[in-house]
Image (cartoon, rainbow, N blue to C red; front, side, top):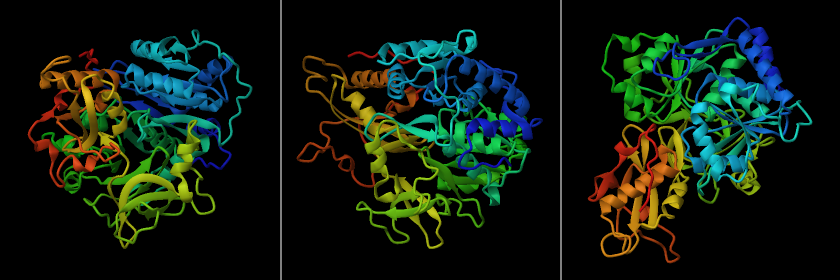
Length: 556
């Protein structure tokens, strides 16, 4: 394994790995005739990857990019994203992965907030980027991926250094915040390498061999899981990351088998979809030793392991700290939402609303730190341009995760719920406040409350509770039928937000309960213990939510 220390940087560590594992596979893409790139599949070894990275470094460096610059990558899930990231980081450039599912307004926010200097964009996504730039105040340079090199524009201000250190920002990843707009998590070279080293050195049921593992990851590279947690894990041990474009239940086993995957990553949504496939002898026709993920429903956990023959090892991590806790030692507590124990380097304290530690067996918010002496070691560097939010999250010397968990007498931690106003749908964190803020701008809407409701496949779905403006339905003015209003409002959300954020359920009501100061009381909207999905007047819009459907024009 490639050793790292506090001074290690991503570029020099990669080149040491490339020399040590030159003949080993580094990145692979499984074949898929329907894919717009690498339809026949592709694989690149460490030695060849080093050559590509050096060539990219020359191009970026000659154009003047280095320490202090931020470059956005809008490359879908292509393996080139990871190679460009390595080249950029080697020069001290900070990578800002861009979400290709975003609408123009969402992308414009990231461009403005991160003050991106350059965007590398595949041609098919250039219309999205140009639409975003039409809304953005900040105007980065743009280069098409297909014309990278000859068409690369020079940096407006040349970097004075191409020598990063361990604390130099390597990435800014955007994660949904509870107050609406996403926050930019600044991740250093040290953070990213330490996260990979942590994962690579876990033992028990998730032990990694050296130069022999093939890790299949169907998750997006604009998230911390694929681009940092698994990527640097495989790099430090000379293993291979198999990066597909997205999770597709009909192709999962074909790609897992053909890629010779020994480890797979999953989200809770993957489990019911794979269990829903017809049973057959192919269920165990694979080389998978274990799977790493989060969110498996308790009642499906044991059934999946019995059918497919490998453990689903639940973990806990977040963008702010992805040295994950892992339930990797027998006897495991399958079907209990167990995700591991605190250990040196990841200390855990469960607290109540007053930040007072709760007794064993009692639900509390999980707060974490590295240690008493160095609480923030190997955590994120902070929220970009938001010191107040950073310090609030670290109040009392512990990072407040916003997750409610319990700890049993043996120290095992069990996930209970999210304290934050966040909806977790198919692995995506959706801020209810962001959806509420958008809906509140529409002339049809008087009041809105957005909640999470359970979903049998996707863990949770977005529910919008709406009071329509007087005169909007019947009467005069904006008079429309309720069903028409619901369609208009869904299309409005779908045109402004990534498809997964649009409401999957809508409930139109005459009143949403509020306090004397007009603060909405979400917990009083529906009777306790009642599943709102079955209530009269509830509209199921889930079939309207399609990843590849164009955003409809919305008007009232």
